[in-house]
Length: 387
Image (tube, rainbow, N blue to C red; front, side):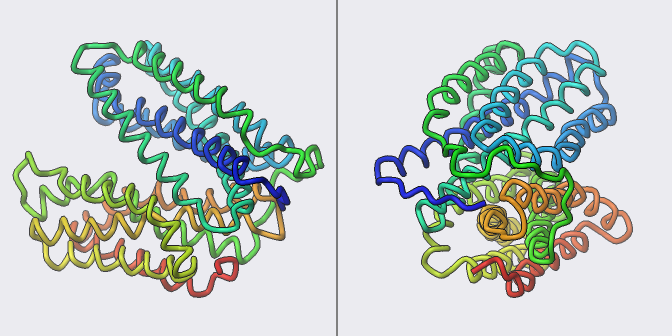
């Protein structure tokens, strides 16, 4: 897909703000759900095992939608699909709050993953188009808005919990805010007239070697990201031996530099080049993991996860940006292919750590993740679509 819009500076600004708004809506909606998981667990009287099984519905919905989402974005256009996906994502969020039985929650979470991924592919396709208009790297800042929205939404959730606002009211408030943002921003998104809308497209397309390489880079980074989300607290408790009150220290360090790194990532990528940025990102991740493994003390492990967060921050945005420039398939299909491979890493990272830890120990499993992180550097050196 090639966008040839030569927008004046004012129009460029509105295009960028509109796409950023849709990233913000996604982060706002997802974090609202995440902040109320413990409350919904208690409301439905779920055990830890039961909750774990229920939570699988969301990534299953996401994975099921990957090839369909790319096809829909390619056939009907990213402008229409980002609106369609964002509205359904916000509506489905409200349904989560009204689920009164476990099977209802499973169905709604599956749909939440389905619409969330459709919106994700569409908004990233829009972001690739806006980046082409700017003629420089701006993708990381869009993903930074997702992270910032997640932080804002988590704070809103904390407040609602403190004043005993039930989840369904909380989710309705977030949905209303999302609708206000969606309908304000939509008219400024990239028009579909700049592409061959309606052209017949196959639903399943095998990605070429270059896209597979990008997917593997994303895979390695997202194994690392998934490990930090699910296991950093456990690592600090069991290996670093911090007090219970300090167990989130590593996670907070990781999230802080991941969010900040996304806002600085575009400037650095434009300064040193995208390929070098990815190589440096892999080195940061691998070095950070090595510090946490070989020096499992609070200061060194926390500093290590600061490095990991910064390293992770720009990998997926840069990989998605490169995928959108594929000449062998449309941006939507290319993004869906690369997202599929990358997201498998996010899914298998946490269980991989558990399996390796069971066979050896938690430090060794983190070392394995560190090796995969270093593979980001090695693979980036060979990726032809990254310049």
